[in-house]
Image 1 (tube, one colour):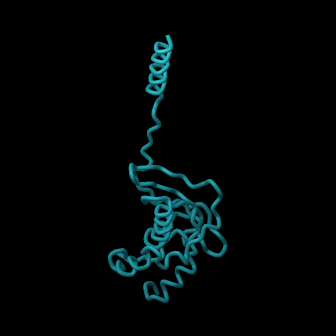
Image 2: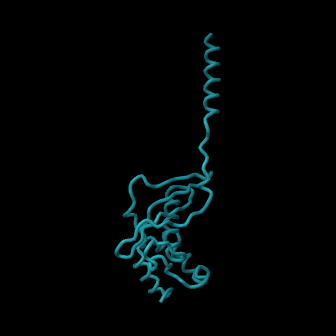
Image 3: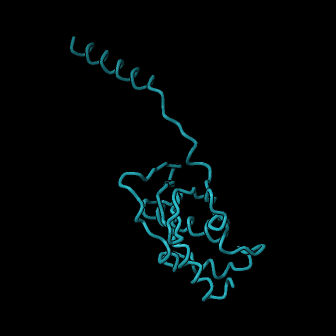
Amino acid sequence: MKRVFLYVAVVVVMIMTSCNPQKVTTTAFYSVRSEFMNAEGDGSVTVRAYGEGRYRGDALEQAHKNAVRDILLYGVEVPGNPHLSRPLITEVNAEEKYADFLYQFLADGGSYKYFTSREDRRRETNEKYWTGKQMKMSTTVRVLRPQLQQYLKENNIIK
């Protein structure tokens, strides 16, 4: 009798778990540019940035790099302020022209860290998605745009 009860219980548990719909998202499989969140009076811009990496730390670091890259090369749409919406490097094919500088600047442990801040981030607002062995993460990053612009002028990237 105990065997029959155990067998029935195992079958019921298997049926219950197999009927449970799996939550499937495709969010982790496409790339997203940084999204505007806030602009400060000092010229810094707060964005929602996305990054991928094998671990949480790698994904966060990549998100910071992507935020700086978007401000440098692509611009982030700031409603009501076209000046802050423009990229800092406005030349044609800037990514190819300044590739050596960008590789060094955006390298692991590179100078980009001095121009990002996590001041505006709230606790528990990071979102995580898994793509098999990779983690995709979104976080809030403040990019210190005026300091970044001054750094580019010092390195003769912009005039």
